[in-house]
Length: 351
Image (cartoon, rainbow, N blue to C red; front, side):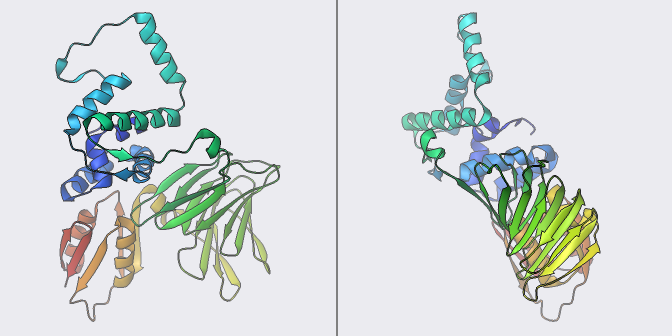
């Protein structure tokens, strides 16, 4: 299973493309198992998925194996399949090609792959329709928007070197290039930041009227619940301010802000609980049935229907590291005594 090592491998893998564009039960099961066996590849896998989702898909009209073989020949990245003899070429010319390919940046290589895939599709049947933006036009795009839906997570590296992990059902907005005086991003939902230190340019995160200001540190912001914002500081120091209040946090402290009342409190937090989502760990602590249902729907990007749940009272706790929906429900069903059925993007829980 572990044959995918970089983004090019994902983008040229027919079954991965088919799973992203037209998932079914068999493909979901396969890639869930692959994800579980290769957690270190999740950021690359997510980036490849995002690139593919930004294209318009049409089902291929010819065998995917043929397109894959032709693409491999063009890219010269792997040995030819089925022991077909490789055409010998001038060694100097071959080295020159590899040198050129290696000098290309990763995103340029990705763009080349997509372009070549598109060209191949013209001969053997359509795969993608891609809207390309010229390099000159890209320079005029000042603001970048990134979104995640239910069941999706995203890792980014900003222009200053700051790393951001964006949780599901969230949005982050940031400039393509930060100004010389400050670095500011806008967040809806939840994200974890590892800020690149820059003593001349403070880093600011604006979230529904609350501004978190840092120089170089790591922290989590959760604004998923309307009217409530939680800022959890892992390392360094942050200053949190509104139009009326301002306070500083030390590592291990969490600010809980009520935007409707304009009030806040500060308390200590357990990083293992707050940052579990970043590590792919689903956690419940004394959660009600509606809370568990909502968390599963967002985590796995599914719709869950409850049957015969009237009067059911839950106070459920559990930890599920890198597990599939089926594995989670199987474990829960033993504890809480219910039956379940999963079909495509829907799960039914029957009590």
